[in-house]
Each structure stands twice: as C-alpha cells, then as structure tokens.
Length: 326
Image (cartoon, rainbow, N blue to C red; front, side, top):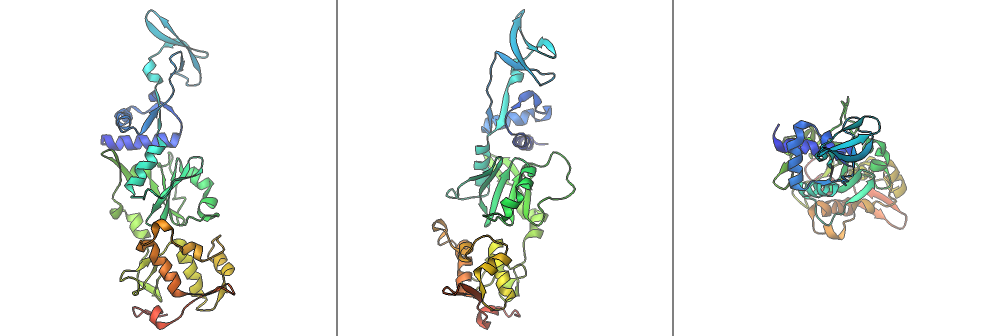
C-alpha cells in the first residue's frame, strides 16, 4: 500500500477513535503514515508529562516515572515497575479543523458557506452539487441522529455523508435510499498538501444514483429532479430533493389548487411556505444552479397569495417543450 494511502487510512482511524491515541497503539504498518500526517500538520500532539507514564502492558493505569541506573522506569499499580521508553508516551489526535478545511477544498465548497456542528462528532461542512455534505467520526453517529439529520426542522435529503469506513463488516449500506455514504479513506486521497476526491466520474454507485434528466412528466424527469425550461436554458435545470418533492406533489393534482400546508405535508417537508425551498441567498444570486430552480418555481407555479393556494400552470407551451406527453 502506498505511503499516502496508509496515511489516509491512519487519518480515518484517528478520526474514528476521537481524542488522543498513543503512538504505540498505532499499527506498525502505519508508522510511516503518521510521519506524513505530522508533516502535513493533519494531527496535533497531546499533552506530555514526563513525570507520569501510561502502562505499556495493561494500558489502564498511569504511574510515576523514576530513574534507575540511568534508565527510566514507570511504576504501574498492577504490572509493577518496568523500563519505559518515554517516546512511547507521545500521543496524537486528528486535527478535525484541518480535515474539514481540506475536504471543503477538495469539493470546491465556497468559503462563504459556513461549517455547522450538528452533534458531537457530526458536522455539516458545506454543499456539493446542491446537496448537503456531512462529516462524522463514525457512521453510528449518523444512524443515531438520522431522523433529525435528514427529516428534521432542516431536512437534508440526498446528502453526501463522509465517515471513516466501519471497523466491522456491515451487511448493507445503512443510508441506502436516504443519503450517499462515502468512506473517507476510499473516496479521498492525500495530494500535495491537501486532499482530492478520488475517481468520482468512475464511481459505479454514484453513476447509478444519478437520475436521468429526460422529460417524462411534462417538462420534468422521471424523478422530478430535472426540469426542462428552454426559456431559461438549453440544459435541464437540476432541482434539489426538496424542490423535486414539491413539484411531484403539484403534478399529482394536475393544476388543482392546494394549500401550502397540504403540499408541504405530502412532500414531507417542515417549512410552512413553498418559497422557502426555492429562494436564492444573496451569495448565490446570479448562479444558474440556484437561479434555475427559482425560475422554475416562478414560471410553473400559480400562486394565489390571498387564499394561500398553489397549483401548476398546465399549458402546452410550458408542459410540452420537447414533445413529451402530459
């Protein structure tokens, strides 16, 4: 295994463990990987007190260090005195700020998108391809908080979830159908002073998950995640999962006005207003990735603000732009 790959595997292991790990607990095959991480400043050293040392045998106790005949010894309450190499007492932790910074750079996440700490050991580090990117120390943390992470007050459907690979075998992907799970050490590699995304274009799982954009339901794709609007662009507009859910519900009613409450409930969204899902933040104004869905909303949705009712505008000019059948 190349040295950089060993270093990435070690970084994932340290992230999984959390806190500090003694250097002696690092697998011998990954010692060179530790050197690379130290050079990259991807790890930070833990506190070191030469007066006390952790027992190298049981690892349960710390004892006082003393000198006998010029050699250093430690007194363990259970194991007794033994000769100790103080270099074994060095301990390291992954620098999570470094990891988040380098992952954001690898995914080209704009600096103005803030990092949010959602739970202990779980962060939202930005947005990639209009889908939230979550980083967690372990997949178990994501599974524990899955309901709130993906379906809570701030839904994050179809997120990218980055965690170290599980320490044990898993019979199936626990996030299948909810999010795309990336193993940190497999999907990212050390490149120069940072990280880069590995072979996304050749990733079978990601390729299969990418929805087809051909119009099936009027101007919408089969999954409603794409909409064809020639008046906006010759290329189809990509919708987020939440935006697609709203159009899917509206399509079912075939132009019959419905209340915002009904639409949002059937779309399984927590917001009270449809516009909340489409509005463009000041920082994203002028960006077709964000302006496209807003244009689709303004063009295709009939809004009766006085009554609070919404429906799709059923017209051949809009709903049959490419000859697709309604």
